[in-house]
Structures are given as C-alpha cells and as structure tokens.
Amino acid sequence: MTIEALDDKIAAAAFRRLVEHLRHRTDAQNVDLMGLAGFCRNCLGDWVQEADGTMSKDEARTLIYGMPQSEWKARYQTEATPEQLAKMQESMAKNAG
Image 1 (cartoon, rainbow, N blue to C red):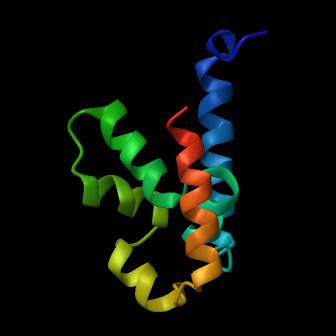
Image 2 (image 1 turned 90 degrees about the vertical axis):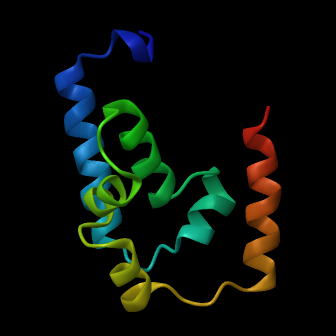
C-alpha cells in the first residue's frame, strides 16, 4: 500500500494523535526533533498552513502547539546546546536530498 492510498479519515486520526503526543511531550525539544527526524512542531504547523491555504502561520502553529508558539517557548523551550544545533544542521542537510 502506498501512503497516497491511505484513507483520509485514517490519516487524519493518525495526524491528530501525533499532534496530541507532541503536545504531551513538551520535553521533546524542537531542536531534538529536527536533529533526529529533520522536522519539528513548526514544520507541522507550516505544512498545515500550506495545505489549508487560508490559515496564517501563527494560526497553524497555535493549532499544533495547543497555544501560541511564544507561550510554548516561554513555558517549555530550553536553550539549545552546540551539540543539538550541530546535529540539527546535519539532519536538515538530509532534507534537501
């Protein structure tokens, strides 16, 4: 089965579960997500915005974070270490391919 063949209802349910999981796992920093997988909460919000076509970037990111991004950052974001930033840059380079 290809991802395109996946029923939209199933895909939507899985996406919602992913978003809820990320809202719960505030310990998973965006820089770590970027370092491991090359995407983060911001990326998900941007993809929602692109797919919707009417939502602003802030609206889409608020949808993903469950609160304004600035509030999430103030509550949960920690200072990135040089190692985290280096791993993120290495991972992001793989996205271009």
